[in-house]
Image (cartoon, one colour):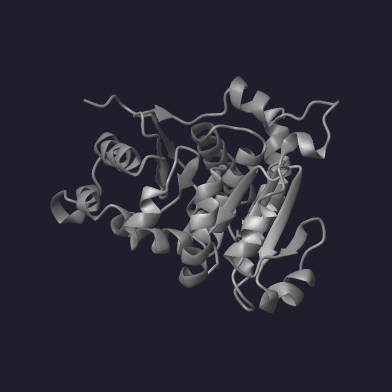
Length: 289
């Protein structure tokens, strides 16, 4: 029998993990690689990359196919750029030991995600999978078999239903199709994490994060303006940035979820996804980071 999920709050431990020591340098805080899709589809990955940089990753690189190189180069400054044409190019890039975390899926396209996932999974680095990467994963049992404890999956309910169809119906089986209570939903996410062998973050007004060992947390955002295109891409980037800095998967997912919601609450009505990373400095300052 599972216990009630722990509530995500800003704790002294969370604040301590977010601080940067005076003597640190950029490589102390890791290097996140965010993989992008082709021309005209790079916006989501750029949102992820900006989130990773704002949350404190020392360096962030966008890995783009050749068709998107000029488009992305015209849009970024502090974020770096590398051509990643195919799986071989990704494998070569990941030989760099300074890369400490990856983010895949936002705007990548299902085909590109499926082609690059085996290389990323085999490397064993902390890896956030969202959007198109989740779709590619859902349709391929071999890819699912490659998931490991350093992976974080960030599905919304529709993506969760494709990843764990045998469990998904249990999320909404109350009268009038109302959502089940948080404890019941947490049990389902815990089962999914155990079955998949990695951390699963189920996005929504009640965000649940579970690890394969049963550890689970709940965050109630109370931030309706997060219901906007691209907000999930930023969340994936925040997690990747924190993983790059060395946080474990559960702490990274919990901290990113908290900061994501607080940034939206701080900004308020009119929020769009681009505003979330830029609202983070105020949130971090208010926390005493």
